[in-house]
Amino acid sequence: MRFSPIVALLAALSAGTALATPPGAPPAAPAKPAHPDNQYMKEHGYEGPKTCEVCHPGTAKDFLQTVHWKHASKVTNVKGLDPAKEWGMRNRIYTFCNGNDIVNNLKEIPANAAGKTKFAGCNTCHPGNHLSDVGSTGPAAEQAIDCLICHSSHYDYSKRKPYKTADGKVAIGQDRSVEAALAVGKPSVKNCMTCHESAGGGQLIKRGFAFDAAHDVHAAKEMTCVDCHEAKNHRVPTGFDPNNWANDGVRLSCVGCHEEKPHNDAEYDAHTAKIACQTCHIVTTGGAVAKDFTKWTKTETGFYEPSTIKRAPSDTKPVYAWFNGTVENKPHFIGPSGARADGKSKIYPFKIYQGKAFYDRGTGQLLSMDFAQPTANGDALAGVASAAKTLGLNKIDPVAGWQTVYFANSHLVTKAKALTCDRCHTPTGVLDFEALGYSKAEIAKRKLQSAELWFEKLLTKELKKEE
Amino acid sequence: MNKLAAALTLAAVVVLAIPRSAHADEKVLGTITKIKMASGDAALAVLQDGTSGKTVEITVTDKVTLDKFKDRRIVEGDEIKAKYEKKDGKNLATFFKKPGGCS
Image: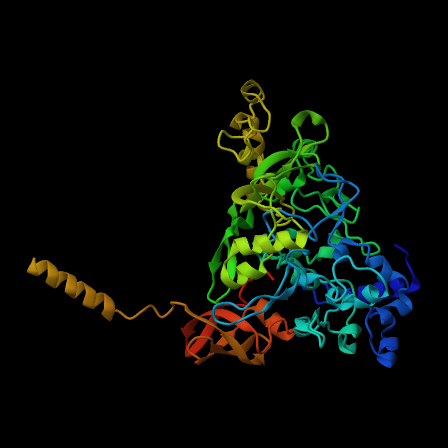
């Protein structure tokens, strides 16, 4: 980070503020510097990317190459994919969301039994205007980017709604007011979570919890999403997740901030060679555990939803598996690849999700679904037929089947409730050592399920705490 | 047999006569016709029930929903699924969200 005179001045000012803080009170947060060119926008107004590009030339064109715009990328860590093609929400066929941007494109769906219709589609969260859609390129696409939905702290979300243009196309509105533009800055948690909390068909369905102080130790320390997912040129670093394929080619992990041996305890630190941080520090998981896309449930709104079983964040215990970053990808299974002996894997925690959808009897491949028809009248097969037509599949023979998907557990991080020795190393501990590749003889020899392994250590710690 | 019938009838009368718990949640699915920000930590939302057409005033105090009123993620005209409990003459929201949807 460059240390400019302005930063020095701000540091001095914030230090002065801290000195003036009454004893016992938390220090005031340093004042956030205003966006340096607000004056330009006050004088010239705000016209979307065209205005941003006055100071950030080339940024819009560059943004069109990111996952946030393309909803896809080349994927090198998932088995069975053509590495020359791009994969992601745009075109994936799986059972957490059985639609995708192509087959379940935003549109006005058919009227339901009560004569009601609405706009719906997977790409509702795409930061364009839908006229320039997922993966589009060129000058019109560059000017369609909704910079402020991620960067303004005063965005009027009521303006970001689908509507029909005069020529009958479906577009999404944007807040391009000067007021919103003057509040430009780094994305806040709200900027990110307005879209990301709604993944998978509604608020908190995917994970079951918000990124807030009650649910994550990082949020409790007032960290924001972009403190860890710190983007460079709008390329957002992400971890490895069997469920989440598209990436900007930049990866992150806990050791980007934390040391490799962070515990001040040699035995705990030794675990980090084979145990991922998340395994001990994310002890529960939540959100949808199963969905049935073959059977839609009518809701009180008169529309239908995929039948979904979801759980509170503390209700679902993770499963643990060796994971080396590569992903098994079969029609009925998407999950971690890895083994104890491969020299690259660590034990990670996962949420197991099971989804039921239609497969093609002839090819055995999973079919995707347009949600317009089932949302209106519950007819899932009509949705499959519509998707097949969009994809140019002439002969399909749909038959229902289940797919298991492993979700990485990367949030809901705790320090206070992290697993301790006694949570794993007992006969009923959370780790199934035999399933993880340890023989009965080794488990017995190394006392992996015995209090003998940890009793003295924990007793000493607890006595120290009492002191 | 007559005694049994009388006992069952009496039990049914007793059950029906017991007032429902004051804290039982009421539900409504309706359209917001008005949002009044009462103060920094409360707002009053008027919902028109989609089925009966009746209006109900619901007091919202949770921070997340108030924030959605402020940045207009929830505005007048939106369809809302709400649950509320009657307390001190007010309908206090215990749940106040747009209905979910694969949209």
